[in-house]
Image 1: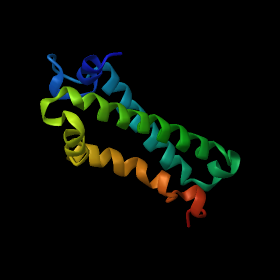
Image 2: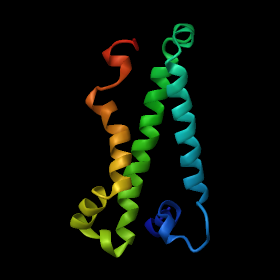
Image 3: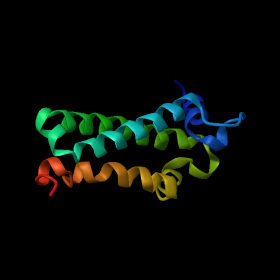
Image 4: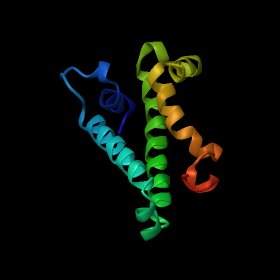
Length: 120
């Protein structure tokens, strides 16, 4: 997929039609599923029945959302405001890019419940 098509799929302001692109709808659905899985993980009975399931799900969601973040970073080069290295840095400090980064960064820094003990 070329960068211009990817940009139109990921950047709502680049779409000529109203509403979210199919790709953004899939990302929203994944966010809801990941949130639901995180809620279910707090239930001790479920954690005991499937001890490794939530770690696998967490890793899978982090991989998906990391790829999404990197694809957005790549695609934003289509926007004149974010062209070049300096533009990409500027994009990385936009509100939604920071939200995306904050969502995945704890996993890579080791601040996850699976590495730090159980929920109390």
